[in-house]
Length: 237
Image 1 (cartoon, helix red, strand yellow):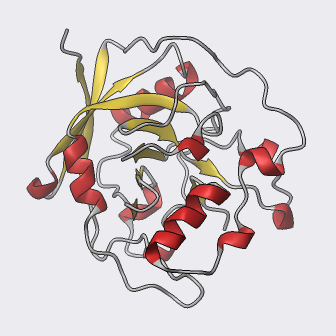
Image 2 (tube, rainbow, N blue to C red):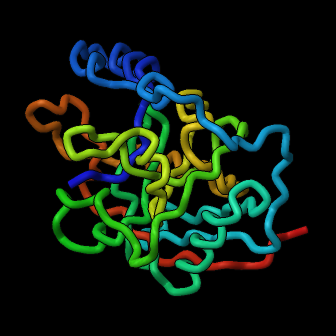
């Protein structure tokens, strides 16, 4: 199964591994820029984000995780914002979980419908029934609090090139907890956390399952971090 995820760049991953005192795994990591023979086109540059009239409010099942409020940028990523709002209205995200928490890389990731079941091994591989959303890259930097669209990673073994992988955004999303420069212009930015980024930090700090052979670092929560609901509410002026 080709999972949807946000790939760490070579530099970012190696730095994270070095900080952990781990010396394996960096050699196989590549960035979109490294693996793509063609420069990316149609990147929106110099455009100031204009918040949508509605915000997305994430309410967690466990009150200890609080809530997270996200402003959306339809002038930057109109298709992804439209998809996100559509799925929210359908109740698609209710009962999903943040299935990936990685404070070293600096992200939490959620939105996978497969995270509703009892099999954690399939988390990260799910989609909505809708077609994929094309990439809508911009020069907005991935700073703390940015919300981006997760997508599949390139997998030549299964015929998935990096160029094709860029067009596989669908329903999963992630929140960056710190500056992650390797994501710049490689993943669609469609919003920003305006309230509750500290709650995202708490989620990222939850216990994880023990590492598995060949995977020295685990990002799978030991217990489900369930999203009670995501709703649309009027943005405060």
